[in-house]
Image (cartoon, rainbow, N blue to C red):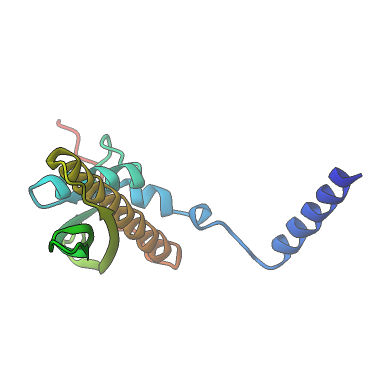
Length: 175
């Protein structure tokens, strides 16, 4: 009886959503293929490597295809001590990652989109040096993953709202 009521509620909800014009973000034409055609260039260093890897995963980067966009990233990292003990040693830190990106069209080199995302998170600092370093590196990885997710969402929304991907010409066949 209870499962029948749940099924009826789901059917009514689905019918209501279909009538309001709801469409999933990634169902919009060109969103997925345009995201897969973004080549990311990140700064050197651990955080740059991490965010580039997370963005390539988030975009489902298709390396067999010529990129339609080039993304240049700039990163700023800050770490603030929080939760200071009586002996003036921080037991907790706040880590802030600011990622600024510029998306340019590969064929023309024209600026297509610019944006900034800011990720703030905290992590515990242990008395043992290795545990403290591991916690800091985990914070960097979590922040890079969240920044990549936010950039992906901004770009997917931008593409779904009508941004047109640039025309990519097929390479000329030798001949």
